[in-house]
Image 1: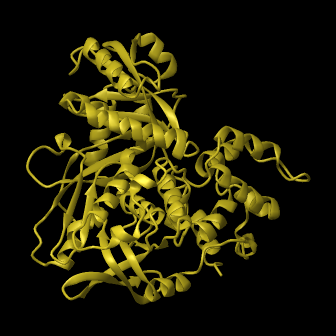
Image 2: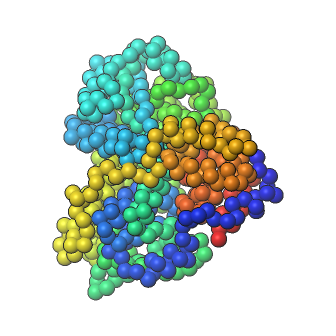
Image 3: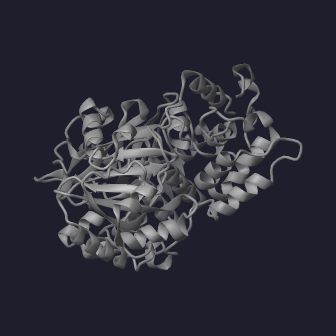
Length: 536
């Protein structure tokens, strides 16, 4: 590993094509009048900004924290059709979800997602029988045009070969189906890059301190840069509130008497080291409506999730001892005890699902998008799910085009006139990228490690070659950040100069996987902060 004393020499000079500085971005935001100001850098706000910029609008996007810094990087990391929705007869919804899932994983971002086989175990005394689940997974696969194979049922012994930690006591059969998974933080960040490539101006760590009004209409926002306290403002013809769990907080800035429009459900997850290889994921029914997941992800195991009403401050959401016990207890239905040792837990995280307001159990609530227009003309959007992020972006744009009294429609290209499956930056075959990284190393130096090449290829696509060039130019940047993780120091420099990373958490939690692996030590954090401080 690189010594602490060598850090000041690393990445001192920004790479070519680096992002503009924060002061320059603030000046640009304050000087221009935008067609659309999107407040909120979760995936819904990011997707809307991307589509709006594609449509030719002048777009600004700001967030009080980091891009995908809250709910959008606290998901189950899945692109899925929603198997449980079949129980409620939502066939059309599942088919639409499958269309979006396959579009993202096959054509929009094949470099950031990968297919994952799911095993759905059927235990004696469980909430569903083998025949019902077998029919369910067949119908599920049919709704995806059998693009992931035909849903079917296999024997417990066959499933155990692929998942050695599968509990077989009382196991009658295992239903099989296919979906996809991703690194949600990386997917969101690549979508931000797509938005800026289309012309959007973006700034994270910029908090809204108040809304601007012109003749009673919301016409922009006043902001404070959280990195240095600088105050500035943005003027826009239309403001979109996409602040997720904070959506009603911003609505009350527009109208102090605004009634609540949403309710929140907390979803907690645990990340564990794996005790054996996992070649499939487990989706285990807990009751008629709930499923608990055990997902092989990033060489680790992801367990969850919970689903319970949350009424506190969204900034305070965290994983409690009760959450941890519940997740481990539910995982124990299908996972052997040795894999569920608390000593294996490297990280835990919780996010807040935004659901439509109203009564009823949150586990049965529809994951639909809520759109409201306030008294000052501000649009607010909340809810939805990761799988359909592109569809939601298009839907919001169609809503903007149809707004009475707005002339945005005259200035934008209709969604029907834009490509339906525009790829995200870095699109490439990750296996081909991995191969190139392994064979194209520096002539006098050591080759890139196989796990590092695989990590870069599946998190950056063809943009991995930019990171490789940084490492080739400065051998110190080719060193691992931590010996137990595939990431290298060049990724920190790249995150600083090309991916809006401002804090150690931006780098360690969302640009890389060090925090999730439990490897964000004080020493590592100090070195990352040293590199970030060298920003020009």
